[in-house]
Structures are given as C-alpha cells and as structure tokens.
Image (tube, rainbow, N blue to C red; front, side):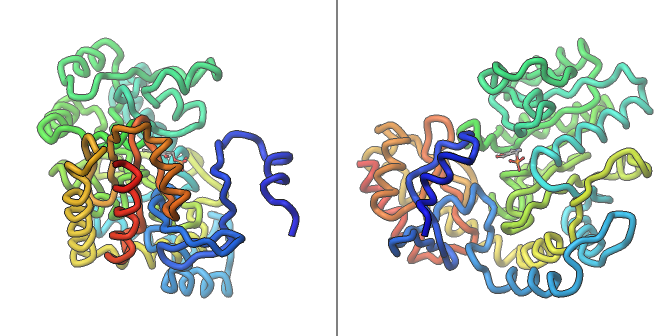
Length: 387
Ligand code: PLP
C-alpha cells in the first residue's frame, strides 16, 4: 500500500490539520487504523454518522437505492426525495423542503428565502441578515459573512454584504441593529457548536422569536450541527418551545452522505418559484434514501435514550478532576478542561478515543446509538486524560 499520509500531504490542499491516523474500517462507534488499532469514535465525523459506521439499516437503504437509480436531474421526480420531504415536514411542522448538499449550502438557501420574502413583503432594501457573535454558519463567502467570528473573515475580503452580528443574549442590541439595518431575517444556532458548545438562554430565544414574529423578520435556526436528534430532541429548537420560519440542516441527516435541507415554514413555504434556486445533486435519491432510514428511527423512544446517555455523560464528567465545566445538550457536549483541550484530545487519541475540540473545549459528538459500555470506556479514557 502506498504511504497514504505522505500522498495526502503532497497532493491534498492543506486546509485540515489532520491527526496522524489513517482510518481503514469501522463498525458502529468503533473504528480501526491500518495497524488494526481500535478507537472509540466520539466525533462521528463531526456529528454526521448518526447511527455509526457501516450502520446496517442505512447501508441497506443506500445500496437498495443504488441498485435502482443513483441520480436523476431535479427536472424529474424521484421517490426518496419526496418521501423525505414529507417526513421532515410531518416531524417538524414545517411546510416545504429545499434539498442541497451541505450545511453551508443550506444556510445559503435560508438567506435567499429570507431576502426574497422580505423584498416582496417590504421592499428590496430589507435585505440584512442578523446573526450572533461567536456563531458559525459555514465556509462559503456568504456563510462566512454570516459567521460572527472575525478571524474567519480576515483573509477572504470582500465577503457578501448584508450581514451584521448581535451579541448573544442582548435582545435590545439586536433590536437596534434590526431597526438600523432593515433586517430580512435573524439566523441563530440554539447551541453554538464551533463557538465552543454554548447553549443559548431559553428566555432569550423565545423573546427573540416573538420579536421576529412581531416585526415580520424571519426567525431562522441553523440546525446543521444540533439537528437530527443530536441534542436529544429531533431539532434543538424543539427544546426551546419556538417555531422557526426557516430551519437549515445537514450533517447527521444524511448519515454519512452529503445532504443538506432548508425547511420552510408557513410564511415562506411558497417563497421559491421555478428558477429561483437549484442544486444539481440536491435531493439525490441515494442520499435521501439513507436519510429516510436515519429520520424514521429518530422517534421519541430513541430520543429518550439519547437524553439518558447525555445525563450519564454529564454526571460522569461534572466535577471530575481536571474538568472545569461541561456544557451542551444531548450528545453534543463541550468539556472545559484544566489542561489545554488539544493536549487532552491527543492523549485520548493515543489511548484509543477520537475526540474533537471546539474553541478551548474538548467536544464530544458520538453516534446517537453508541452502546453504553463503549461510551463508558471512552469517558473513562477522557477522564484519565483530563486528570
Ligand atoms: N452551520 C453549523 C452550525 C455548523 O456547525 C457547520 C459545520 O460545522 C456548518 C453550518 C457548515 O456545514 P458544512 O461544513 O456542511 O458546510
């Protein structure tokens, strides 16, 4: 076998600071490198493989569709796309779905929906999108503009205009920005993931949703990381008792194949007309067949198990030696460690556990169906690394 690490280093653009690990196989929450060393996967591809690696139900759904039609243009109908849209709407109360390929692209679709809605309702000058400081919404030029973290912006000016950033929790500040900038929409993460696993305050989110409804400013929730069962609810907004006008999602929805979705609520269900928006691969039947197998299993009983595992993780880590605090919801967990997070993650890796970081925290996003014994093993390794 060629030296894959050397090959990658020579030929793949250096946009990722990779760990020195080559993963060749896996099953569920366990993955293996080329030497056969086993790791517990506590990152699930950054919240993607919701039911783990080589999940048999997802594999069966995907391979069955592969054997029929792997792709059709969106000029024609395919069953998995329509059925997935129906299921998403039934489970969320949203009314229509636009499918795309990634989280950034889902957010781009949300922004387009808000701008078109506002232009038609209030005038084309109502185009500003308000997002929050410390947010993360993606890496395209528009979603970088949406991302409220300056350091991502620096090398890539000029970004798409029409984005301003409010401090999370400061509703008066956001109201002032909305008045000054003629807002079309507000886009928030209920839990800022890349920003360090920071949950928003419930009162703030509900007051923000009410303000948006009163002003007819679209209330949009980025559920790319928090969605599809990750927080112990099907979507994180459900933990907050709010009804968004637009929801963007991706990651776990496809279970490992690229799939994003923009869920459009009552106000915007008909905002897009033919020609307004499109994506060649959006709604690909293989990706949608896999997503159907994921979404069908995210029922109340399964989500209750996610919440139980979450409660166990929080109780195991809170107050443990070297753990300063634990944040998050469900199986989206941020651990503030006394040692630098990078050092803790490296020690975990050496001891057979793959963890992530988010800002100065260790971040855990295991598969939602991780067995309790595997979860215990991983948390024990993490606790030892923290101490
Ligand atoms: N939005 C949020 C909240 C995310 O966490 C991410 C990725 O981490 C994105 C958007 C971008 O998603 P993608 O990398 O699929 O474009």
